[in-house]
Structure formats: C-alpha cells, structure tokens
Length: 364
Ligand code: NAD
Image (tube, rainbow, N blue to C red; front, top):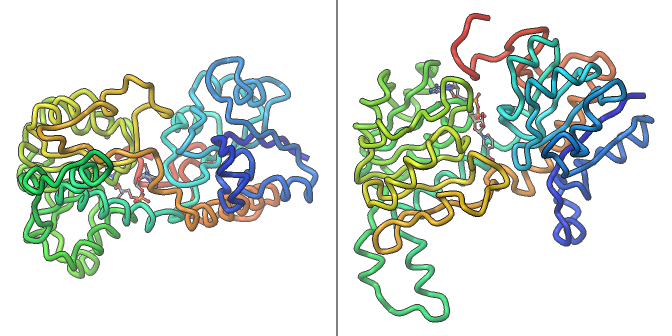
C-alpha cells in the first residue's frame, strides 16, 4: 500500500453536475476507484499554498506521500525546499503536460521520477492557439462586447483594428508536439510564410510538409513575424524569453502564449498592449496560478478596447483532454507501482537526470 497525494482544483457545482470534469477534487481523475481497488491511501486536496497546506503536510515528513499528482491548471509547486523535506517521495505525476511546477533539478538530485501524460492535450491547445490568433487578428472581442446589452452598432470601432490571418507571417517558438500541430492547422489559412525558433530541429520531411523555415536568432525571428505563438516548456532558458528589451520587435504585431505565463514577462507585455505597441496578447497561462486580482494582464487593454484575449488556464483541459490525461495518469501510477516500463515520452526526469531534450539544453 502506498500513499498518493493529489492536488487538483475544486470543481464545485460544475464537477457535481458533470462527471467528465475529471481534473477536479470531486472527480479526482478516477483515482478514488483505482486506489480503492488496489488498497492505496489517497489524499485529495486543492489546499496547496504554505507549510500548513494539506499538500505540504501530507507530502513532507516521515509519513509523507510516495506519489504526488498535480496538474498545471492548479499546480502544487514542488520546490527544492519541499522535496528536501519529503523522504518518501518517489514519483511526481503531472496530469497533463508541463512539469515546470516541479523543481526538476531538485527532483533529479533526489532520484524522484517526474512524468507527464505526453500528448494528452496537444490538439486541445493547438486548437486554442488558432482560436486566439483569430480572436486577436479579427478583433473579435471588441465586436462581441458591442453585441451585448448596452452595445452600439459601431462597425467602424471593430473594423479599425481588424485584419485577415491570410497573408501574415506566423512563427512558433517551440516546434514540438503543440507547435507543429499549430503549424499544420495554419497551412489552410494561407500565411505568407511560416517560421519556427527551436534549438531542436524538425525532421526535414515534417518541415517540408508544412513549409516552415527555421530561424536561429530570436530577435531576427521576432522581427520577421507578424504573429508569434509560444509553444515551448518553461525552464531556466525560457523564463522572460519575451521581455522588455526584445518586445519592441513585436510593435504592430500579435503575441499568443498558451505555453506558460512566465515565458513572457508580465509587466513588459502589459506595457506593450496598454501603450498600443503590441496589437494584442492572448493565451490561457499566467505566471501565478490562480492569478492575483491585481495581475497586470487582468486590466490590460489596448487603444479602442483591443488586444486582450486572455482566459483561465483552460486550453488543455477540454473534457476530451481530461479523459486522456486521467487515463494516462492512472497508467503512469500503475506502471510505477508494478515495475512496468513507462512510455518513454512520458518521462521528464528519471534515474537522476533529464529524460527529455525539451526542458532546456544541458549536458545529461
Ligand atoms: P514538446 O516537448 O513536444 O515540445 C516542446 C518544444 O519546445 C521542443 O521542441 C523543445 O525543443 C522546444 N524548446 C524548449 N526550449 C526552447 C527554447 N528555449 N526556445 C525554443 N524552443 C524551445 O512539448 P509540447 O507537448 O509541445 O508542449 C509544450 C509546452 O506547452 C508544455 O511544456 C507546456 O508548458 C505547454 N502546455 C500548455 C497547456 C495548456 O493547457 N495551456 C497544455 C499542454 C502543454
């Protein structure tokens, strides 16, 4: 019997009414049934901040958990300090994709395996990226707001900032599973050019299929693109990748980030949108989740109401995605407990080192 701590968001009424809302404390990824059947102790909580939180109390110490499950949507921040106090912890599972809420270097040094359900929501996110591009480029939100009670028939107020996606130069930072799916979905929109910026090169056949060209220098990449989409993990090399110095290259352009909030500096983005330099910023990820009320992106708005297409962290948590990452989470736990091999692509940190080339360039 092992102890499994699971940190998820509370779904409340929504979770009671919709059993497919699996990523909630109420429905718990199907783990209640799994643990009951297999005799494991399961602690489920949304309480995750501070030393007295259920997450920290149940993970640390000599009675601490062997397995921690969390999601990027309501992340349990597994810091080095907590890892150092968690002698029993052997496996940290991300129910979804993106394990930056875990201090990966600390996990590696303690021999903790970090795994995520690779591929589980890549289509969900890619669809959201295309939607956000269209919302921003077509200035959808301003027209939608004017269509609500109290709005007026001010077509010009919308159209003054409305463009076509066709003919634009579009680039992705990160051309992995999501970035490549975004490129595939962009092809029918007839962009004038597609670029990618990534230290890992796409296979020639894959690049040819979508007609994408690699740019090695970030500033040059930003200068070339009309629309930039961010699709790389958050790690030491991508914090503030878009910052107050290089955001000037995006003057008169649009930026979409569904990867991780901290990849784009919050103040620099808000300043650029508010001043009208950046035509728009959109995505679903925030540098602190849940966001504080005074987060600069909540009040961010460009001239004439344009330019803010932010939403909650939902791009990767459609009901379809939840079914996939709930199933994948149980598979990872079951493999681990029964000494069965994991899917290679699910492993982020294993056997004391990085098992993937996606979380930064480093010597293994
Ligand atoms: P992936 O591993 O398939 O691809 C990531 C790519 O980013 C790799 O090709 C890697 O080389 C590249 N990369 C890493 N560092 C880079 C850098 N400094 N500059 C340029 N490229 C870099 O991962 P994926 O499945 O495509 O997911 C990417 C990220 O998207 C995840 O790590 C996660 O943070 C985020 N994500 C968000 C949601 C959501 O709900 N918003 C859901 C899933 C994933």
